[in-house]
Image (cartoon, rainbow, N blue to C red; front, side, top):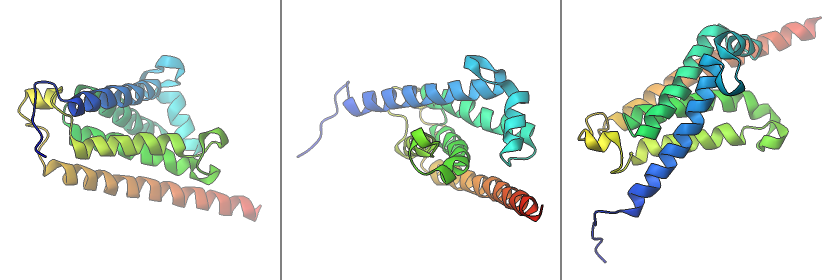
Length: 181
């Protein structure tokens, strides 16, 4: 069976809906961290929280997480630089999932379900691409080349491994110090 392409492709519409929904949620979470919007705590409050959970320096980590979420989410919603946008958002969510992992899977127990889901959707969009209803498509996919997908995902993976690794070490050191008293 051959597939014919019409001017309306439901896959493109599905990608648009997935991008806008996921990107909007991520952008709102990032705006909480960066600007204190939507009940967030801004850079100062988020930085203090980041520091308390082992992401040091807290303020710098708050900026990185906020930019990855707000910037990655906005770019995903627009369908612009989709490999980089999806990778950045997935990386931020991997860092959040690492914090929630000790609480198990489900969100109602403080688990990593929600950040893992947002991260997987973001990574899937980085791989699948933005679809026809996107800025990337309008620009001839200048910022959405096939080689950019593995490059963006690999670069993000390295950054996440370093960041989460440093946090894990700091948390273990703090736990060891607390046990000594």
